[in-house]
Length: 233
Image 1 (cartoon, rainbow, N blue to C red):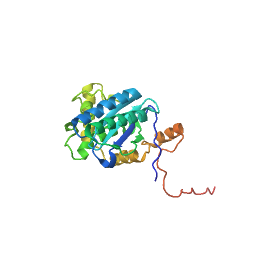
Image 2 (cartoon, rainbow, N blue to C red; image 1 turned 180 degrees about the horizontal axis):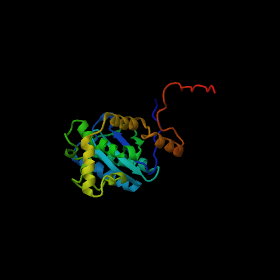
Image 3 (cartoon, rainbow, N blue to C red; image 1 turned 135 degrees about the vertical axis):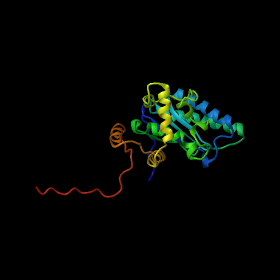
Image 4 (cartoon, rainbow, N blue to C red; image 1 turned 90 degrees about the vertical axis):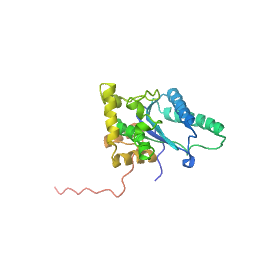
């Protein structure tokens, strides 16, 4: 089934994935990781996008971000992509594309999926077998979320603030979420929705979003409709 045209809804969190062309590495050294984060911070500020969580993997990266307007995400990603690729190619003596086409994204329902999506993103290095715990991986927002270091790129979402009344209680609560891990259904839902462009949330959330945007946002159910029995009264 063809992927839906990408949707951006101001004020809603979006899960984004950008992959390297042919799954090739995006970073040649630590300076490249730092450079991409620097460019991302500047582009996010310029285009009014709040970054709630991120992880930079060797050949792709994930973001959880809320745009102020409908052009914020595309503007941020285009600015980041062009700038980073130009500098990366110049520094490493290469030419040609670095990205695997357009970034992928989905709108998510905050109350149901935002904290889970943060954990999903920051657990990527663990699922990939790169580290045993997300705190061991330097190129994600996890250390900021649990108070190990301050990361100016991260803007906490209100639901993260709602995890506790103090920084210590919020950090402890979020650490507990991550250490508990995600169920396979949550992981599959987050993965499939982002790769296929479906909005992710409950039925009421999807209906409300569909009314606001005027477009189909979820997979149509397969099969023939069930006919209701006729009344005999």
